[in-house]
Image 1 (tube, rainbow, N blue to C red):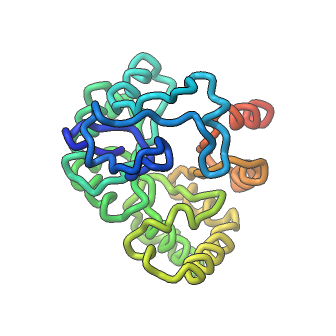
Image 2: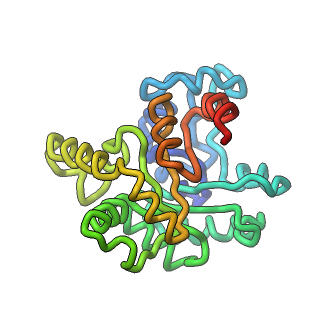
Image 3: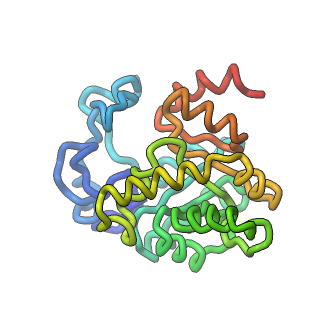
Length: 252
């Protein structure tokens, strides 16, 4: 989620629109009416955009959050995971208002988070009642606490434990604390963290404390098998059609 220049809440992943639209502009620097279309082209080596029949060759508009939430208003079986990527109390307040307007908070259909701990702090400050996924730093600290034997007893401020099944470096390269570190150090840190997190026991401790576990970035067979092996409560993918094909024969 980002706020446009005219303070509209839009659903878009990148702050800079170059990768997804071909236009080198920041979301926050444009009014909603000025936003370019998302292109129907491969992105980061994945072709899910080209395989989506709902996206015309000329691309499709970046949607407002309100437009997306309307799809859930009459479907109480669906839930939404919202990632906020802009450190703005106004953004969080506007998102909260929209969630209340469409009844998603009342019906417990929403979980939100940010990879940035500072933004997570804003989420808690504005509305502590919405379940929140752990930030990257909380992920790391929880893993350290596990290996110290303290994870079963220390207080935990988040309601959902989430981790990446794929390249964790993709999730941390924009974090203020880490992004200026040398690349070899970041790569080593991510590989070490992935090895430490791999045991099922980390998730088992979380589940024993009533904390559901999500696996994000599941886009390959090996990543799906990883998520199933650690008995994730929810699996999130950039390619939902592929995930449906994997999930249906593996529902048990």
